[in-house]
Image (cartoon, rainbow over all chains, first blue to last red; front, side, top):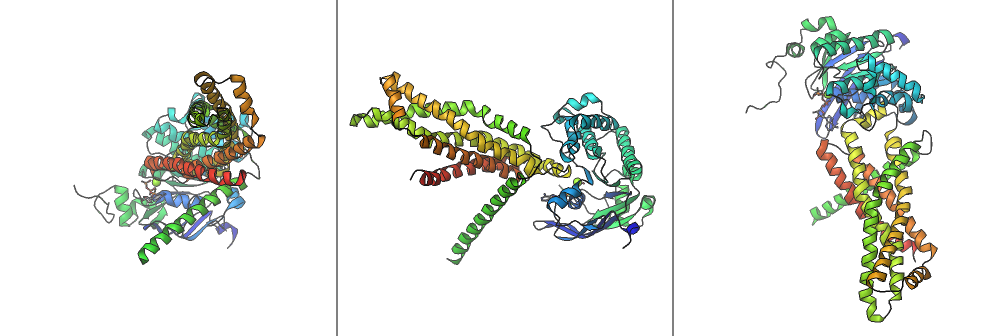
Length: 260
Length: 257
Ligand SMILES: Nc1ncnc2c1ncn2[C@@H]1O[C@H](COP(=O)(O)OP(=O)(O)OP(=O)(O)O)[C@@H](O)[C@H]1O
Ligand SMILES: [Mg+2]
């Protein structure tokens, strides 16, 4: 394997179950360095679980996950901690620390994770908050005092604060108004283009997906059923993708809804 | 018969597995404390939480325990004309037994539950995962400071409880039972040895550790939303209370023979 061809992230045959429920059933996906990959798929298909497996927060039962060519499944201790420095993650629910102020949340990775001095970290936190459209006065509030959309933006600021190499965005625009959603889309694109980060985003929002993705992959029933360049999404020739993109209730994807 | 044995075996195995997981959890948290970074500010915050805010509850229960001890032993000892023994009974029961146990149980209800609820909420809202992605070990950041604070704070709390309990006994003995105050205090000092107090404080340290460990362990392993957090809160209090009584017996047997 030569250096240039090594994908930033290589996922092979990853399987993950919860009890009897098989959520991931042999996922294969690659993401090149500096690429923005978007994962789409129905609710509950395991998109968040896949990202947590890549981050090492969940341990898959089978398969391999390589970051920069290094196997990471089963990695622990200091090696895992070092790897975490490469990652930034926006959690679906925000996952802000409610015992800390907003700016302390954003600066957390800088202060605790990297040992930066508080004053300096605070300046960076205020900058990052500005980048997501929040003023410095918001920095002094507690997460519980913010609206849902504001919490999401703070979580986004926290994910990018340490300028990580690989950033995961779990539904970055859900719960935002269309204008703010576009601001966030641009911010994600900027992270990838200007900082050279590799990004994996999860979204249901096709407008957002088209704006931020270089490549799109679709997860269905525990596997990647289609992946390709963003330009191909509207004529993928894949019935699952077609149904998802056009948002039709009829098609190969059967939602588990029981008639009343 | 076979199914009966099988189910007894299964329960026993589950018990062993749970004990193993608990030991592993505690060991990992303690091992994390051997290397930096340390979080002294978090330890301090927990000490204030456990110690200072538990003072009213522990003080009140200790006061009434001391009072009732004096009253009860009077109704027993008066028949043998041994009123002077009351002072000794109160001070020895408080320092060796009731001070640590009552403070432990009260703190289990107040602090153990709060720890489980806080850490449990952090678990089900992904905050613990978020800590890990921000290069911070959750065991080091969340669990270890609480274990240390529990271990250090409960002895201090018990010392206060001992004093208040003895004072409660003194109040009842002098005002209600009509004893001579100076004589009562002399009797209190007479048979009390330093080791009685010290052994009580050792018990307290163990109980403090148990309360914090149960709160953190059940909180950390919460799952399934608000209901799951509620359940782990209950588990934390119940298991800490039972373990306090079990270890009270074991420590009494070990320390006072
Ligand atoms: N910790 C867990 N314990 C048990 N089951 C889980 C756990 N996490 C996820 N699951 C299950 O795994 C499945 C996939 O969950 P996941 O959160 O990955 O869905 P998703 O694709 O992100 O959906 P959404 O778009 O709604 O966020 C769900 O059916 C869920 O019930
Ligand atoms: Mg999800």
